[in-house]
Image 1: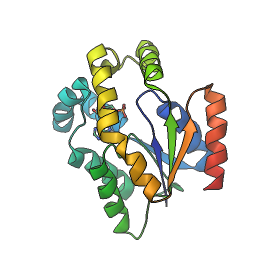
Image 2 (image 1 turned 90 degrees about the horizontal axis):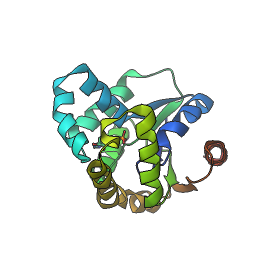
Image 3 (image 1 turned 90 degrees about the vertical axis):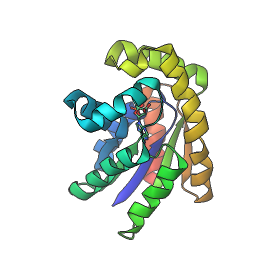
Length: 190
Ligand code: AMP
């Protein structure tokens, strides 16, 4: 199995690009944010635990997202690989992912990082709020905390994956088509 990580700040376009990537490369898209929102909508215990943290723009505990990821890895079979979107979100999750994959002698195939500046993050999230109606896109305070959380907790992963030679950065500015074609060029080289 291939294991691709789609990396980038909130609003970088990961969800948008993931759809085209999963179709072209026969991958299963795993968005931990999307899985958590489904748990909240279903009113599950896990969803209840996650909601206040998501509403605050903070990360939910590692074991919650890692449990969801492992269960997808165990149950999904008919694909060439997985496209992880929004996971890992901190260094502990990245190490745990390596350990989970090592159990079956596997490893992360490559990281596709979509980069946009902080000013663009806010513009994109404000725009998305009008389309998707996500609660965590609606409050300025939540958006700001997600940006801070990204810089504090998630950005260090760039160094982590550079050290293993798996990090590849793409300029996330430009039209959806432009960014997609840059991503495909990169994926074809993996
Ligand atoms: P996203 O849809 O990826 O923007 O995620 C929305 C929210 O879900 C984040 O702000 C976090 O609160 C939570 N979340 C998603 N993925 C993770 C993760 N890997 N680790 C911890 N929290 C996460």
